[in-house]
Image 1 (spheres, rainbow, N blue to C red):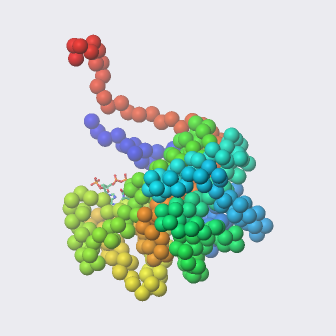
Image 2: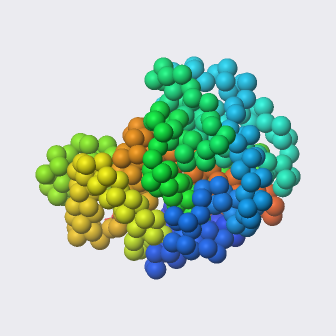
Image 3: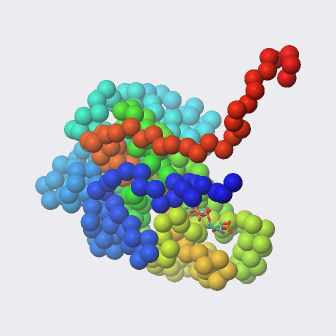
Amino acid sequence: MADNPTKGLADVVAASTALSDIDGKAGRLFYRGYDIHDLAGRTSFEETAHLLQHGTLPTRRQLADYGAELVQGRTLGALVEANIAEITEKQGPMEALRSMVSLAGAEDADKDSNEADANRRKAARLTAQQPTLVARYHAARTGATAREPDPSLSVAANFLLQITGRAPEQTEIDFFDECLVLHADHTMNASTFAARVCAATLSDMHSAIVAAIGTLKGPLHGGANEQVMRTLESIPSGGVAQAVRAKLAGGEKIMGFGHRVYKTEDPRATHLRKMSRELAEASGDDTYYRMSKEMEEVVLAEKGLFPNVDFYAATVYHYLGIPTDLFTAVFSVSRMAGWTAHVIEQHADNRLIRPDSEYIGERDQKWTPIDER
Ligand code: ACO
């Protein structure tokens, strides 16, 4: 039987959205009509989250109000606090985040409402809380005393401070902030789709976000950034071409390459490559950057594939001092802005998402009693 042409829902329009748009042939990405190249490096993560969740780039006044809402939302609830140590002990970062968001839902003041204002308040709290959850997870497993979020710092600055334990330099804050902007939304990617499917049953925002976190975790989606770093760490710096060719010859996928929608360079990779190069130079050891460049050239030559967002994000996070196993969790810190905006959008004009399937099993089977089978 011929393969289903829509296997993996390729090219299927699964939802209407005013949040983000991709031109896969031209390699362009827009958030609410703004080109990502105009936003990256010029718009903060807080402004971007406001754009997605509230519909407009904020005025100074709106940004101050939204920023205050985010600062307030950084504090964790009693239920999460009571369970964080045990969750950390028993679960990896993404599972722990899934569990903690689920617990946070149980004590959210708006948990029983899907109404737009309640959803926007929850969106701000979830966006504010996610970096705290990652930082607290990291503190719990390293035995460090959890550093309280600093209300005077941006999401990016606060997160780097909490994770690395040192005051980040301005360039590091700016670059990490740009990373958060670049990862904030991306049309109907797998985790966003999962969130929308859940929300479309009129389930609540926290349930939808739990579905999204579980979906982001996989190596074909957000989990790829961690795998990119593991690949770089596992091959000798002088043996990149040989290692990549051997993987390809063995039918292995090279993590951080290829994309369902982009047929050319992912516009986010352009920014991340530049950041990776600059951070590598500043660090005094550009080995992983040089290896990445070589890997990019070999994969393009051998398979015609371009790096996706996860490829250079890996070395950027590495140079920023973020532990490798937290890379996908960092992705979730940013994508929370988009996921929650999609849930708001889904609830505002809802219809159950229920696709069809193509039946490929046996037909007209003759039933027999159990003793005659
Ligand atoms: N390395 C080697 N070959 C690849 C790669 C890769 N990274 N990506 C695609 N291909 C090949 C496939 O083997 C397949 O070849 P074939 O036709 O000879 O069988 C062909 O290209 C099409 O690949 P699919 O997996 O069918 O493409 P799809 O659109 O379903 O998948 C995906 C896209 C999942 C991103 C894929 O390119 C991949 O697995 N990449 C590696 C994982 C990764 O980096 N994921 C992160 C994506 S970005 C994000 O989610 C944030």
